[in-house]
Length: 217
Image 1 (cartoon, rainbow, N blue to C red):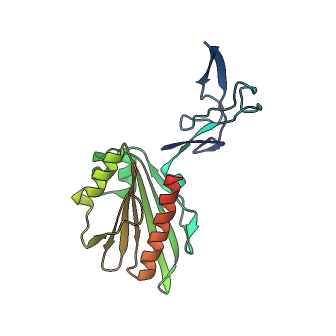
Image 2 (cartoon, helix red, strand yellow; image 1 turned 90 degrees about the horizontal axis):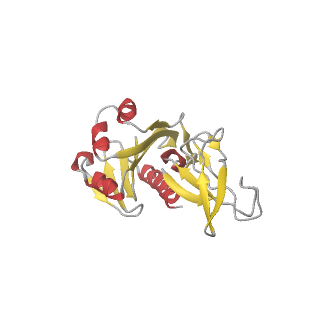
Image 3 (cartoon, rainbow, N blue to C red; image 1 turned 120 degrees about the vertical axis):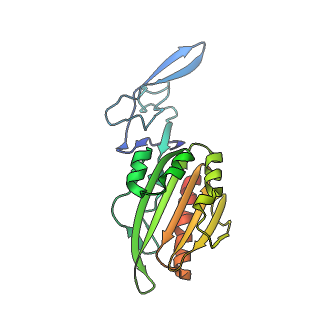
């Protein structure tokens, strides 16, 4: 998850508000958070309101909130004529990850994955319908993400380093497929499509750029 300062607090169920208590101690305002409001889970921590307001985000003072974004929040709804095919599959444990990707899940667990999302998209390409798949992993640290990117077990061969997206980027070619792997901060991203055309590459780069910008925003 990624933490932001902003005007909206959200968890996976949508917007939420959290009760707060302000105390004066030696002239310093101390905000004590109690994340117990209905609809406000532990995924969402809000700093709502100020000591010049009513303590619930309705005052005249500064209104700030801490926003936690999960990996699924970086996904585009659609791009390049491709739209979501079903709901995202999300994992936060090794067993959940195994259920989604079956073989090979151990490598990501070994690199300390924290969250994972898979989303499939379908759209017209090369005279037919194609499927584009997005994987986004959040690792525990930037170093974990860098080590995963460099791990030879995820190198499928026939790859070239690009460097246009993220901190590191490579393009890998299959017989009738393309995939792009990206590392940005503590995130590792894989985008794949069942086509090897130049248009397919352009589409992968479009999705990768969108996700990278969302992570950086």
